[in-house]
Amino acid sequence: MDNVKINVLSDEVIGKISAGEVVERPASVVKELVENSIDAGADSIEIEVQDAGQSLIRVADNGGGMEPEDAKLACRRHSTSKISEIDDLDNIRTLGFRGEALSSIAAVSQMDLISCAQPGASGVYVYLENGEILKIRPAGRVRGTTIEARNLFYNVPARRKFLKKESTELAEIVNMIGRFIISHPGIEFKLTQGERCLLHAPKDMHAIERIQLVLGGDISRGMVDLSCSDENYTITGYISRPSNTRKDKRAQVFFVNGRFVRSKVLSDAVYDAYRSMVERSRYPGAVLFLEVSPREVDVNVHPTKLQVKFRDERAVKNAVTGTIKKRFEELKQTAPGPQTSGTMSSDGFARANTSVETEAPEVPVFTGFSEVQNEFSYGKDLAAGSGGSVSAEGKGPAPRPAGAFFQLGGCYIVQIKPEGITITDPHAAHERILYEFFSKATENAPAEVQNLLFPVRIDLSAGESVIMEKTMESFRVLGFHIEPFGEKSFIVQAAPAILEDRDVKRVLYDVLTDLASCDLARVDLDDELVKLTSCRAAVKAGDVLSGREMSSLLDQLARCDLPFTCPHGRPVTLDITVDELEKRFRRK
Ligand code: ADP
Ligand code: MG
Image (cartoon, rainbow, N blue to C red; front, side):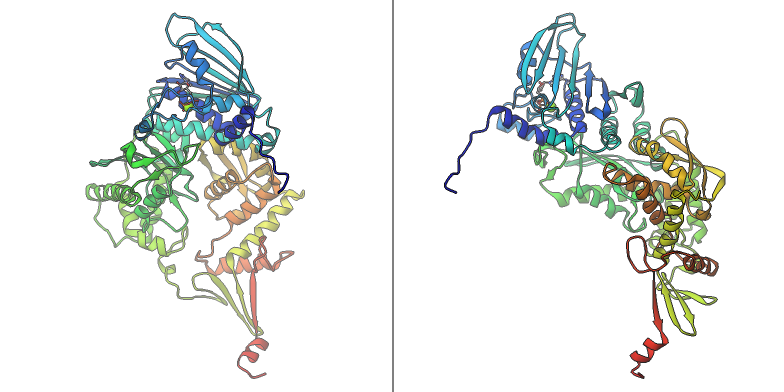
C-alpha cells in the first residue's frame, strides 16, 4: 500500500462513469429522450432508430423547444429546468429532474440537437462529441426539438461489447415505446427502423386499443376497466379476466404518477387479488395507473428511475388489491345469466375458456360477466387442480386405476409388474420424448407435420413479434408452420404431429416468453428452441392422464435413445425391484 496514488478523475472520465448509470443501452437513450419530449409538452413524438439504436437514435418532438442559451446549458451535467431546490424533489410532476440525461448521452455518443422555442424565430443547432460542444450555430426548425445520438458507445468499447444481440436491443426499445404509448394516451408516438414502422399510435387511438397494440390482442381481449379513488390514492387501469393469464408477468405494467415502474409491491397486490382464481404460476394481465402525492413515493432510488419506494407499502398494496377485488364483486353482482355459483360443472370452465378465444370486443368494456362468475366459482378448484386438463373425476389426489397403470399423487405414473414397481415422472418423460423428436427434426429428419383443421391465430406484443419473426424459420424446422398475418399477428397453419392434442397456441406463447427473457446472442437459437419447446409442450406434472395417454407415453419413452433423464438431467423413472423390497422388509 506504500505506493498508493490518488488520482483526481478528469471530467471526461467522470462523465463517462455517470453516463453508464443513466445510459445502459440504446433503449435507455430512447427512454430519456422521449421523457424529455413529454416533459416539454409535445403531443407528437417520432422515434427513429438504425441498427436497434446502435448507429442512430433520433427523437423529434413538437414540444416547447429550447432557447439557444438553454440548449447550450442543457447538455452540461446536472443542468435541468425542472427543479432548482432540494424541496422541489418532494413535488416532482415531470419525468426528468436529475439533469443528467443529455450530458450522459453526449458523453457516450456523437450527439446533435436542433431546437426552436418560438414559432417563427430562428432555432439553434448544437453538435457534441465526448460531451463537448464542437459546433453551435443558428438553424431553422419549426417549434420543437430533434435530438440525434449516433454511434452509441463509440468511445466506450467495453460497454459496446455488453450490448445484446440486435433483436434483443430492438425488442427492448419497442417495449419501452410501448409503455409510453400506454401511459400517455394523448400523445402520438411513431417508432420506425429504416423504412419499417414498428409502432404507431395516432393521437386519437383509444386507451384500450393502445393496450392491445402493445401487449397483444390475446391478453388484452375482454379486459375489465378499473377506476377507484380515495383521499390518498387514485387507481385506474385495465385488468384481464382470471381465465386469461400468461406464464410470466410481462403483461403486467404499472405506472406511478405517469411513470413506468417495476414494483414488487404492485405485482404482489395484483397476485393477492387473483390468488384463488388463477392457476399457480400463471399471471393475469394488468395495466395499472396509480396516482399518489409525490410525497408518498420516492422515485429517486436509482438513476434510471425504474424503481419506486412507497412510504407506506402496505397501504398501497391494500388499496390496489382492494380495488381489484371490489371490481370483481361489482361484476358478479351485475352479472346476468344463471346464478349457479358453486354448482357449475367443469364444462363451465371449458366454456369460459373458449369464449375468451372467440370474442373480440372492440370497446373497452367488460362483456363476459357470466364467465367471470364461473371463474369465481371455479377458482378454488383451479388453484388446487392441475391446469389445462381439470376434469370432474380428476381433481382429488386419489390414485386412478387405469388398466395396469395409475397416477399416484395426481402425478406419477405407477406401473406394477411381476419384477417390481416402476414409477415415471410424466413431465420429465414427455420432455425427453419431445426433446429427442425435435432434436432429430433439426438433424435432417423432418418432423411429421399436421395441418391444423382450424389454423390458430396468435396476436403478439410488438416485442414478441420481433422475436417471432427471427425464430419463424427455426420453428418451421420443428414442424410449426407459422406465417405473418398483419402487423403483430401470426397464423399457425400446421404443427408437429407429435403435439396432436396439446394446446399449440399456449406452447408457442410460453416458448416466446422464455425466448424474450434469454440472451439470444449467447445461446444457440435452434438448440434453445428444441429445449424450450420440449419443456413447454410436455404434459405438466399435475396433468391428469387417461389410461391410453399413460400407455402411449410409456411406449414412446421405451423407444427413446436416452430414456433415463430429462434434458435437464433429472431422472425420468425410478424402479423398486422385488429384490429391493426384500431388503427393505429385511428378508435378505
Ligand atoms: P432533466 O430531464 O432531468 O431535466 P435532461 O438532461 O434530460 O435533464 O435535460 C436537461 C434539460 O434540457 C431539461 O431540463 C430541459 O429543460 C431541456 N430539454 C431536454 N430535452 C428537451 C426537449 N426535447 N424539449 C425541450 N427541452 C428539452
Ligand atoms: Mg430528462
